[in-house]
Image (cartoon, rainbow, N blue to C red; front, top):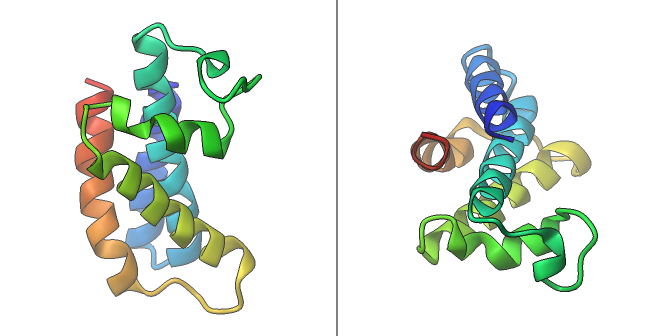
Length: 116
């Protein structure tokens, strides 16, 4: 998951520079999601530890997000990037650059810190 998180972060940044904001938002979410999973796995946690889940689904990871760094803000970051991904993938309105900039900065910091 560490490599996947970093790959998705790199892809999100490349797509953002290319002006592909919707694709960037989608990759940004998965970078944060996979970094969360990596952090949980590093701590010996399994999906079954939460909500009796069989795999790392979105809700399970969201509910455990505060465990990555011990910060409640991590759950907010996951939710924020997920909302952007849902907009990018399913809604008529495109993601705007100003909407992705702050989550991008937070996601970069989070992914790099968690996957060090």
